[in-house]
Length: 77
Image (cartoon, rainbow, N blue to C red):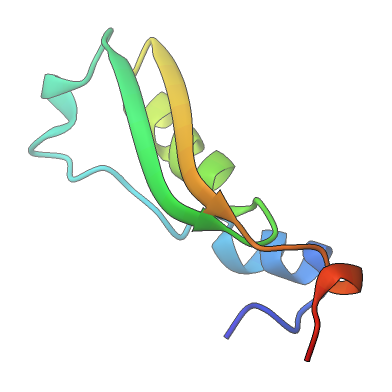
């Protein structure tokens, strides 16, 4: 679980965690890609995914996040 970890630890955990299937990479080379994420906690997964698409040859990445977790000071438990 990533949630309790500091941001720098999360960044290390997702470094090189995502790759594009080499058999499918030719389909994205030079193309514009859209990455859709269900929700954002720390914001480290989307850039890591974008890095994988760029490494596979995507020309441009756009990220869309459907929801974001509230900052800790807004939690009411």
